[in-house]
Image 1 (cartoon, rainbow, N blue to C red):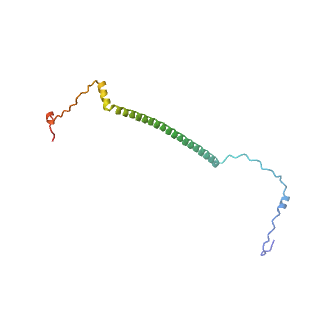
Image 2: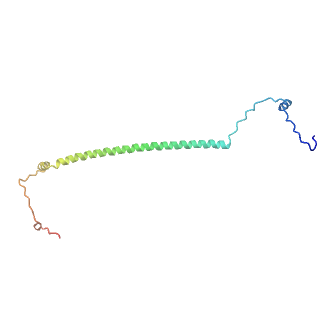
Image 3: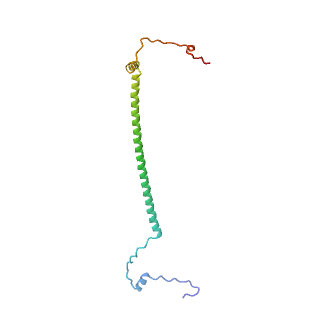
Length: 144
């Protein structure tokens, strides 16, 4: 022991090799494999959450795909309907053209005369006379 006013002296640290020599040697063994632990609650929730997200994502992608197919089908149906209407318009226009040609042919004076003579057996007058009747002879009064 050191006297009361003397500085304390530090002891040297024991040499590790000496300590190992004094202790009996233990055989180094590998640690036995621990049984698999059940995943923690947070890990289970994250796996469930990931699975749920993947399922929701798959359902959404399938819904978008179905909507795209339905939209394409509707467009094809509308195109077919439009083509049908366009065909009807062309046939009506062609029929109108035929009727216009037929009306032009039938409205000529010679055609009207021939139809009147042959179909209705009308005779053509040799002289055409126009008669003018004044209003007071016809019994019509003038309006003021």
